[in-house]
Length: 283
Image (cartoon, rainbow, N blue to C red; front, side, top):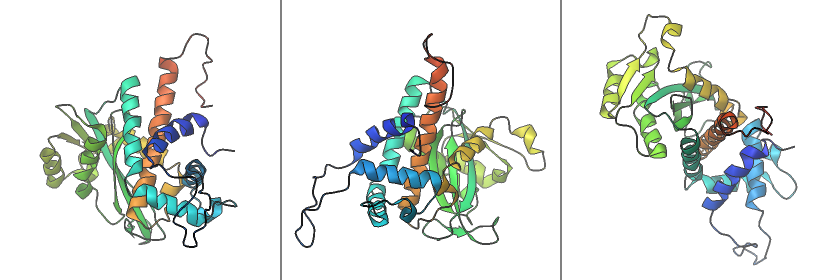
């Protein structure tokens, strides 16, 4: 049984495969001169998605002929050129063409998850008794589509990540509207946060400290929903990878699945013909 429905897996694989370098059927660099057949990239990709969804280690999703070393080696090779960031951009472009992005109202928020193995993007978590944790800062549009992601240790405060997070959204989206308003919670209520948003050319709407949050959460709740969707992927909740590039690879891969899921859900009612069923469940 596949980890994700084919309507999500197939479009992403088509874009992902186009970014991979061409390789022969056999490996010519074997130290003994053997002509062993390569494992198909599609097979390894399905194992990577399985590990991403369930959060299992590579040794648990490995199968005969597809060892955990093979899966790990492919992930490290794919993460080096930023393949997941490159495949996330076409997903945003498709969403913008069919539904329409709303980058004029960006919401930014951070989320702390577990990283028990430590690594480049791990730090002492202030909410998990000092255990190793990962913090991701996500910028979403007004509807919750993830635009840019920045990862760091759990011991980093949210305001220092406010500068690179909208910049990551700019790199993925491209041209931004002339007027962009950034919606932030009261954890960003400081002069430094206002200075960072001003340097990026954005305006900021920051919740004030001492005021109940539900009164001020009318615009920024979408990014919290996006964090909830991304936490559905086990590899993000419990990250055991130590390489920073591999961590970002999984983050952007999950963000691409979230974007495609939102695209399919919203286009079902907008582009549905009269004879199609009205169910919103993904097939």
